[in-house]
Image (cartoon, rainbow, N blue to C red; front, side, top):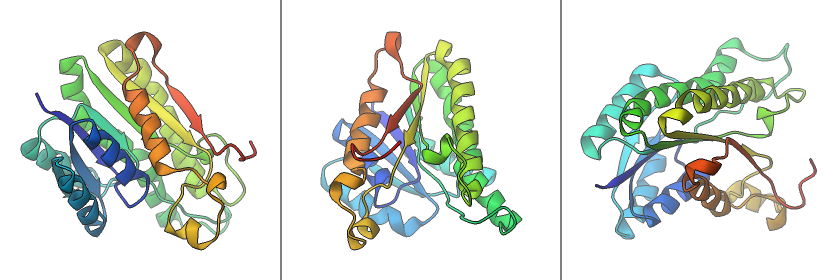
Length: 234
């Protein structure tokens, strides 16, 4: 039976790296993102390597969009045995400055979308008593900094969701893990800013950790891992 991974939040950075990592291990990959243009180069790269990849536009914060995207995924590839939730939104501003609509949109991307995606993926995982759900968190998952409430509130919620799902579905064979990504991930923007390689996280290295976590034996599952550059202060 073909192994299938769904990655929600695919862009040129971590989402693409995770897609490559799972494709390299023989997975067919559902590529989900709100910006459909970001999916084409990832699809082309995976298919050039011989992997199957299905690009699917999806607004993570919209229940109807998530349901439609997973229906397309199931029809095109099948039920995913792995769900990676990598969607997110960053809204910076003081409490008195935050626009309520933008704050809510960020919460939807950072937290609600993970619930919506999990609700689509879990039934088949529970029926199989097997599956993995991996959630991309941030420094804001643990600490609400000044002017960072627009990010931290959603990431705090994502962490709580991971804990609740792990405790509910772990005994049913589904491994849920949350990653605190403590630092900037290398990107074209960090390269242009001259950030030293040792000061940022390598997306391929993060993807390796996601893959390793997926492969953990059920007798020694991780719920949470924190990842940061060796030079990061914490």
